[in-house]
Length: 171
Length: 417
Image (cartoon, rainbow over all chains, first blue to last red; front, side, top):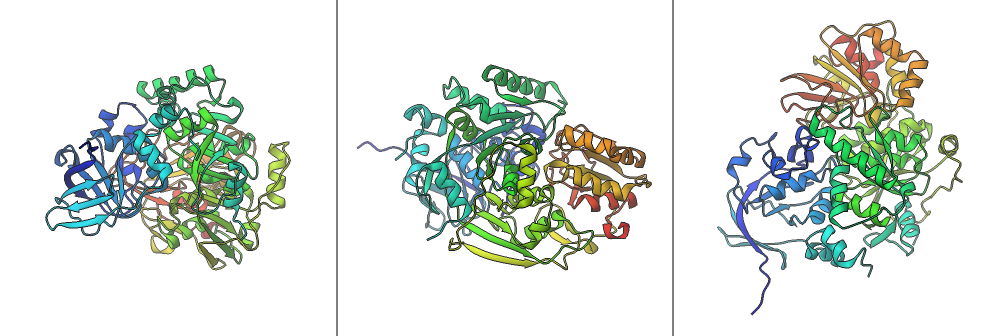
């Protein structure tokens, strides 16, 4: 049986509401370089200086409302992606961050994150839109994406989408 | 069922009936990027295998955030922008010409009813001219300059009406801060906001830019106003284009309709570290400050400099305060010079920065020290915003910046009226 592996597994790192793009990656760094591995080393540094040491590849950032508010810097989702974070889960995302994450191929999951705690092990099925909290066997439903956005996600981001369809695929 | 301004502009640019919730691909009237976002957009453009831009007449680049370059890494990114602009015949505004959001409206890049994207979150500023303009990231911008189109989800609209009359010493910035405090940082998430009412009619176009600019801070996609005689006059001075305003239908459907009577509004302050942490000035007055900053896409225009200049005339900045002034554009710089305002600033002890974003983004030109309080006319006070996560930023109107700079502590500007 052939099945695309889209289940992610990792540990949650919990943050609050309104985590802005300045916190995700400070302007001090983002203007200087297009080296995203370098940027990734400073991920969330101003509000959580130890985050970089604590996190492991495949872990999840779990936040409240309005994740990624503030500037339009695409360096924010890129720094998260290059830090090896598997996905960002939040109750809601700021609109530019939402687009940027989809465009660069960072998985984002909109779901009620209240019952997730730091350190919880999670299993996320992106295709089904399900989040599973291992310790208490809790299942959370993710908000589904419109099909237009799914096409971009499935292509792996907007650049790949553009290459695949040669422009905008208008349905 | 009637349409909101957003639904009308998206319909006319998508070539189909666009309603709330629809995803549409639209033609763009203008697209731009600045030095924090353009390098990444150029890389994305190249990775997409694109050869040419859709129309160089509808694209511009701006070097404003980190200008002049403070180090060689930034210099090489600026060079990448210059090389790309030259190759594709794109107009590039270089170091010292000004902030993108000021140049876009000074230099006839946008007109009423247009649909505009910029790789900068405060692109919403031109809503004051009846433009639907919104910020996007670098990859979106790359596809925009390649194809002249972008996808949008047609947003719901919140209609906000300001009633009454602002008292002396209370400005559009205070109104914007008050609204941000009332709605909160996600109060208009994903939504378009139609801003109107008698207070807006009384405001100059420059003051209206301040309000549309800050609508980003409640998470909105746009902060759009209807056109009036003032808008028409303003557009006529910068453009030869025929002005056709987009009005909402009488029976347009709104997500929410809010009304605020602001006759008794007093000067407002957004405390650290969030823009919606807003209080009347008397709750924080007396807080000592080490740095004052006047400028940015929110409040670096001629009218703002005039207001501050009037307060600072024949006065001195407090000896413990460094006062930085960055005019929003070269034209603002020259006009305020001709009016003698820059002389007032310099005699008062201010430091003049080149036209551009100045110390707003924390990359150069005035990084505060540890534990220091900053009073600023900018639009963001996030921790670390000005380059030091251990500093504290208070956001206020240009008048409150000037008054506080004189006394070395947060001060109600009305004592200087």
